[in-house]
Length: 551
Image 1 (cartoon, rainbow, N blue to C red):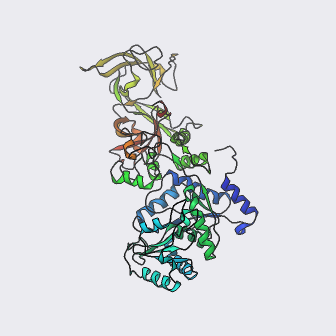
Image 2: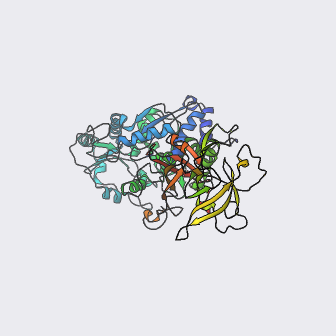
Image 3: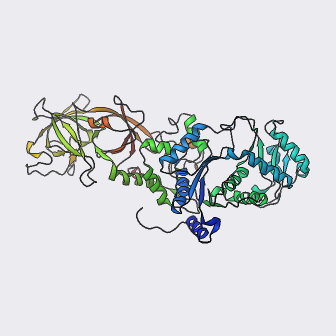
């Protein structure tokens, strides 16, 4: 956005800290995804915020993978996350992993045990939940809470050595069983998990919980501003408690509203369900809100960064209309996308007075929005053309400025033609439209003196290339599928993908995968990664106008 905007509340905090000389005036943020799925548009907001802050205030950002749960994590997700962050246009100062700190985090746990601030608990998860009490009633201590320091050290060492099965014991912080914050009622710090880790292999069979690993990782890296979403507000007390009791670098957590967007879901668990159950092709299905899905659909890094800029950084949750994201990509592609002609619902148009066998070459600008047209390309023209079926009406109303009996229209970059006749099959469907052209009306050299109100696109039958075109709509048919009663998958839009066969101008064979173009009068499209010269496949990024509102 070109206009000046006021500072968001996190920028205000950063500027106050810099002015006060806090942390020596430096800014170090981090983006800490768990590698258990692909990043989505909600993560893009966090990426833009963390990396954007560092760029604005001459700081830097670490990319740290929160890999403390070996059961759900995979290097496939690590690789995809790195690709997405780079694609969005950001570079990290250091690539780090929570698992880098497992030895140090273990030592922190031992230090808390030695200080009498942590104990090994043999209770089941159900028993622990019951012993925590309720929001209106304090928790009750169990017999394990009074174990001696020596016994806790021995048991914790045995946990590390693999002496106990999964779930047999946990390490808990000894905080306050009467705290109004339920998360402060002796939170679990470590659990036993005999599982192979994607980086540390089988070295560990105990793993720190998020709340014990996260703040300590921030502190180890000396992160100055640890930015999380609002659901972590109740966790901040634990974050601060652990740092204070350990006496380590005082990283500070700040929270902002996560991105909620209409007609989609943002839960990685739900997105994984859609993939596993075959409701979508994969994580990068162009209907998915994942960054890889948006990239495959034809969204650009600039449009996503602009979207994140426009929605801003707030302290309260709200629902953002997906049409704003669509607006951002339309705005960019209108200025940058090359124009090409593609007929998606073809009917044959024969120019009866154009000589058989004759071929002409006409010129078309790549983008009329750019001064000078951004170059151009040759467009072959011949006697038989494909035009859109809805550009012809047998009985057109008064203000129909396209083809019908006796009506005239301009063929884009070519001639003015007049409809003389048409042919129908036994079922009453129009199969051919017969027209005559006006030779003096050639685009760029029109001496006919005839003015027509309508212009339509076309493709020469003899030169057309066949393409598979995938028309994508919104994945869900309700604004907030997660809030509706029942299974969120019940609200999937059955019409979210329509696949058609189209005819496109031959120049599109030279398109690069992922490069956007505008199919004139139809929308913005991009060549899919599965496309080949022999089998062109295009994904619709977005329509030219917001047609969903009408629906």
